[in-house]
Structure formats: structure tokens, C-alpha cells
Length: 432
Image (tube, rainbow, N blue to C red):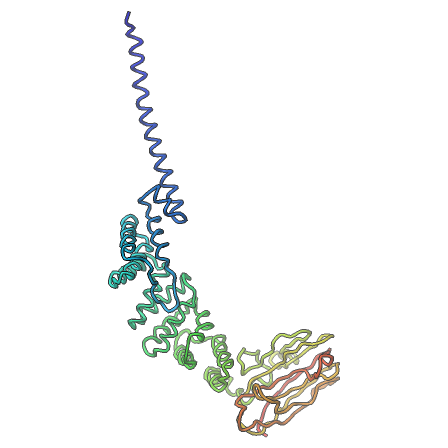
């Protein structure tokens, strides 16, 4: 006999299973899509080809494929990347990039890739428009900003070139060695180019220190920085003492001593010009400024150099050189001078207590040349201040710059053993 209740029960069970199976299938599909897209996104950068096998519409993988094929390597001077790709390959890459732009229209790299491909194909207008689009979407795309900087410089659009140079240095997307040659060309172009650089420096950008420490490598005319410093002097951000000193030392290394001296005098504060004479800061009342025309005292071994107060009056100071027991490596205390040919006299005062074979002495010599004169040797005990002096003559030729230096009077390593200290004050150079 037909069991109607059992049949209805079976039909009810089948009806309940069907939705479960549908939901299960839908869940599996969703899980597959999630896994596929997640894994594709994960592989997009390192293994773009595998990512595209999982998801042919993965935008990062599409742009990465083109990126690897083009190899966008920056080159100093801004020359375009030379293509080894065939026209057919470039067309295929262009299609890939255009698809990436359609899928991800906000990514700057996609526009930059399109610009590079267009440049390789000789489509200059498209290349320029795409690079501008890349920069508009992100100024952190170093290649796009670098390309636009170079093109602007070629077209003598100094304002745009300076803008992109500033962007590159602030973002750190490329090293300064790629940007500073552009600044150098702008400065040497005179006129509008130099003015744009001055505008940027007036704003005290974070890369100003790098600029003044490295720009000299890229300038063919060493006089250009002087004009830059003179222009900055009239702004709210004039050159700092460190920046001026760096320039003077560059000129010093190039043996352009007269120009270095001129720069030093130009920017010396008015109240210190009176002390500029033949010897600067001979009373040691001011801490050395770091200029080659002020006192220099490189670090040595077993020796200390200080500019200490002689009394309770802190402004009454003197040079103090102390030696520990043992062999001293004393680079000396020196100052560069610019004396015209003629006879001169060095005067000063000293006191102290030094023990050793030969002590120390002052000497004047031509830069990279012979000794012109030297003082007595300072050795033994001198409790009270005593005067000393010596005469020297600057020859008519071959001695444009001189150096006054306090150093060891030793003739051999065994005579470099010293202990004690020696004080000097009131040093001057006068015509004799």
C-alpha cells in the first residue's frame, strides 16, 4: 500500500537540501574568487606573469610586466631609455599599459609607463602628456619628475625645471647627483635660470645643506657661487657662515687664494673688518669661525688646543696649547694670510712651562713653499708674560699666499716628546 506520509517526508528533505547545495556552491565560488584575487595581488609585484594567469585583470601585474620589459633606469643628464624592443612588442606593451590605466586610472606609474613607450615609439606629444599626467597623479614618481625636469631645462623653462628639481630633492625619490647638475646649468645660464635657484634657496628647503656641499662638483665656473651668495645676501635667507666657509675651502683647495680672500672680506661683518688686517683675531678674543683666514687647529694626539680666558674677564682670552706626557702628534695652529711682497714683523707674547728636547716655534712660509722666517723656540718656564718677535720677507713672485703656523720644533721623532703647556696672546703682523 502506498505510504503517502513517507513520500511527503522525502520530498521535504529534498527541498531542504537544494538551497544548502546552492549556498555551498556559491560559497565555493566566492572563496575561489577571494583566493584567486588575493594570491594574484600578492604575486603581482614579484611574479606578475603568474598573477595574470590567476587574474588576467590584475592592474598591478599588468603594469609590472610592462615595467620589467622597459626597465626604467635613470641616467645622469636625462637621456631617454634606449629601447631594444621591436615595434610589435612596443604595441603589445602599450595595449597592456592602456588596459592597466583603464583598470586603475589613479596609479601614476601606469601613465609614466605609457609615456616611456610613447617616447620609444617617437610619439613625443603623447609622451609629454602622459608624463605630465603621471606627475599630477603622484609627485613621488621620480622618473616622471626627473623626465619633466630635463625636458623643461631643454626648453629653457627654468621655472618648471626648478619646480621638479625641488620635488625630487624633497621626496628623495632620486639622489642629489641627478638633480644638482641641472641646478648648475641653471646658475651658469645667468639671468632667469639663476633667479629660479635663488627663489628656491630663499625658502630654506631641507636640501639646502646638500646643495651647498655638493654643487661645486658640477660648476665649471668657480665664480658662479660668489654671485649666488651676493644675491642671497639681500634675501631673508642669506648664506650661513658654514656655507661661506665651504666655498672658501673649495677655492683654497683649487689654490685660488685671492678669490677666497675676496669672498671672506665680502661677507665679513662690518664690526670685524677693523680686525681683518694682516692677521685676523690675533688676540684670540673670538672663537675661530672655520674660515681658512681664521685660526685652524686640527686634532692631534697627546695635545690639546684651547682659547681660554686669561682672567675673570671672559673676553680677555689667549691661545693655550697643552701637551700630555709622551710623543705628541701636533698638526699645529695656523692661519692663511695674503701679504703683498715686502718685509714684515711678527710680534706676540707668551708664557708657560714646557719640558722636552726642543719645544715649539712659530714660522711663516709660502703656501707649498719655503719657510720665510721663524721665531725662537719656546721651551722651559716663563711664569710671566714675555714678548717675542721675528722678521720675514715675502718675495716678489711665487708667494701669493702665506701661512703663519705654530708647530713642533722637532727634527726627529725622539724630539716630539713634550709635556706642559704654553700660552700665546697679542699676535700681530706689521710692515717692517
